[in-house]
Amino acid sequence: MSHIYSTKNPGSQCTEKPVFIQTRNYDIFGILHIPDTSSSRDKVVVILLTGASIPRTHRNRMWVILARQLAESGFFSFRFDYRGLGESTGLFEDVSIDKVLSQDLLHIINFLTNLINPGKIILVGECFGARTALSMVNLIKFHGLVFLAAPTINNAERVTHQAGRKDITHYINKLKWQRWGTFLNTERIKRNFIFFIKRIHNKWAGINTNLLISESFSNQLSTLVKKGIPSLMIYGTRDEFYENMKLFLQKIDPEKRKNVEFYEIQGEKAHGLVVDVLVQETVIAKILKWIVSRYLIMN
Image 1 (spheres, rainbow, N blue to C red):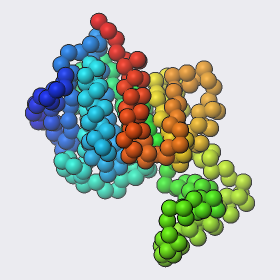
Image 2 (image 1 turned 60 degrees about the horizontal axis):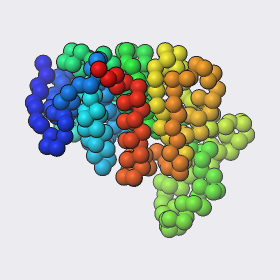
Image 3 (image 1 turned 45 degrees about the vertical axis):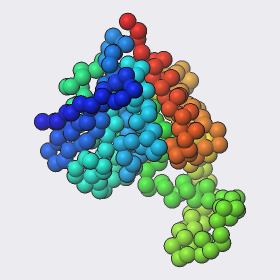
Image 4 (image 1 turned 90 degrees about the horizontal axis):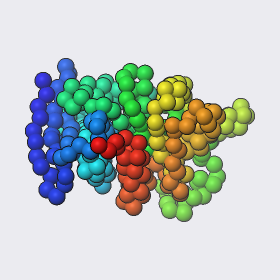
């Protein structure tokens, strides 16, 4: 059993309903944004997923803004707290890129399917949320995917990948903004020593870290492309996984990936996409335009 309450957002053409989705071991809390008038023949619901440990509002209320703009454009939208975060019950533990919260998302999709009976379901995720959304490709049917700065590797490849980025140029750039003393703590020295050894190993073994893609990510993305699910992939050009994602897509036949759009934000890292307010506005506008152009069918 789930509980739904209703409130009208002043100045907005949508109704916002706080929702508790009850599962066997915990309740998921979220906000359902309902358009006042649906301008499409089929109801379309957009589910917004944050990164790990980020509340349903996202930074600078990014998901609030996007959810309301989607609702004002005629789409249902849903933003939520993962188990153990915000107002959701349960424990947020044993969670990583290797262990995404697919079960939370499955509960949400099933709940919204029964409540709204949407013709289409669109998933929008950032970082950990992007990997959680992508994990659905072999579990349940959905009709579109937007992901921001999705990590292309799992924890097992993390040290190898980061070692490839921490060269002398990296540390010189760091010193432009930090004092020498910040590099002289024991934990940082240990960590950088590990990166140094791993970097030597990478060079000796001929490992190009820009080509690192985890098997699970590769399989899921290949399935996404094979199924022809429309996808928008957004990365900053200074993002840790930008080159990995770009090179991986380039290996796929252009005809097969015709439903995939790779959108670049110049000069930004992953966090820049969701921290800098001006960049956030660009990202929100791009996502909204992409969804409206593909899924808004006028009566």
